[in-house]
Length: 63
Image 1 (cartoon, rainbow, N blue to C red):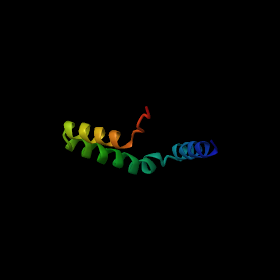
Image 2 (cartoon, rainbow, N blue to C red):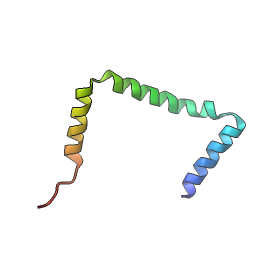
Image 3 (cartoon, one colour):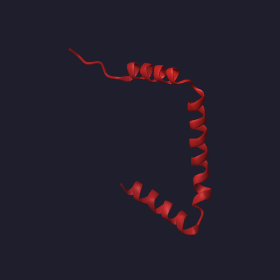
C-alpha cells in the first residue's frame, strides 16, 4: 500500500513540475511498440498462441 502511495506522489510531483511528458515518454513508446508488434501478427495466430498458453498454464481439474 505504501508503495502505491509513493508512486502516486511521484506522479503528482512530476505533473506539478511539468516533467510528466518527459517521464511518460518511454511508457508511451513501449506501448506504441507493443501495438505495432501485435498489429503485425495476424489475428488467428494471436488466438492460437493465447489458446496454447492457456492450455499449458491452466490448472487441471482433478475429478
